Image 1 (tube, helix red, strand yellow):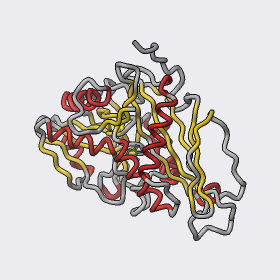
Image 2 (cartoon, protein in one colour):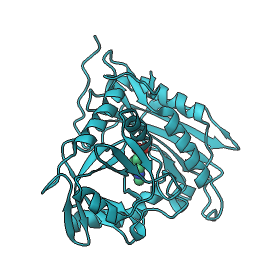
Image 3 (cartoon, protein in one colour):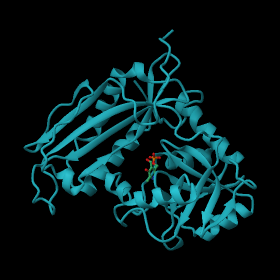
Length: 339
Ligand SMILES: Cc1ncc(COP(=O)(O)O)c(C=O)c1O
C-alpha cells in the first residue's frame, strides 16, 4: 500500500510540488534538462519575453493511481500543441520527445504530491524568450528558457454547479491566426472582458462570439449537446484546440452520440436550450462543466429550467472521461502515460 495522498489546501494554481525542471537554449542548442527545488528564475531586464511577450505554455494533468503511481493524460497531444505554439511565436522548441521525457521525469520526482481524485497534479511547462535585446520587436528570441512546475490541485469547477456565462458578440478573445497558440498574450487580451463579465454580471466566464460566431470562452472550449447529438465549432486558427475537446468528441462518438463539427451562431444557443438542450465547457481545468445560465444583451436564459442545472448528458460524458483519467475505466484510446 502506498502512503496516503496529500490533500490540496490552497486555491487552484497556488500550491507547488517541491521540484521544477529547467533547460536553456543558447548558441543554437538546448542544454539538458535539470530537475531541482522550485526557485526563482534569473532574467535580464531586457529579456524578449518581458517586452514582446514571447511566451507559451501548456496545462495538463497527472492522476494518482491506486498503487500510488501516476498517469498523465494525453501527453502526446499536449507536446504537439506546445510545438505548434512555439512555431507561432518564433520560439525555439526542444522537441516533443524531450518534452515528454522531462514531463515524465518531473512527475515521477514529484509523485508524492499527487492528491487523490478529484484532486490531480496540474503540470505547467512554459517556454520564454530570454534574448536580452529590447531592439528585437520584429525578430524571434534567439535564446530561451524552458521551465516546468507541477501543482497539486483540487477541482476547478465543482461538477454539479451549473455555470453562468456571458455571451459576448462584440470583441474577440484572440487575433485571428493566433487563437490556436497557448500564449499569455491571448489571456491578457481577454482579461478586460473576463473581469468585466464577472463584476457586471457575476458571470463565471465569457463566451466569445464575434459577430455571433460561437468560438470559445476565456479558458475552455464550448459545446452544445442533447440526448442524440454534440455540436462544436470545427478547428480553425481563431481558437485554442483543446485536448479535452478532442477527447470529449471521441468519447461522445463511442457512446453513440452524433458528433457535428460546424460553425454556429449565438442565436442557436438560445433556441437550443429553449428546446431542452444542454451546453458545456471543456478544458483540462474545467473537465466538462455544464452551463446553467447564459446572459445575452442583459437578459438571462436558462438551460435545464429556472436557475439552470447541469444536464444529464454533460454529466454522463464528464463521468466517462473522468473514469478513464483516474483509471476506473479501461484506457480504450491509449490516452494515458503511466510513470
Ligand atoms: C482559451 C482556452 N480554450 C480552450 C481550452 C481547453 O484546452 P484543453 O482542453 O487542452 O485544456 C483552454 C484551457 O486550457 C483555454 O485556456
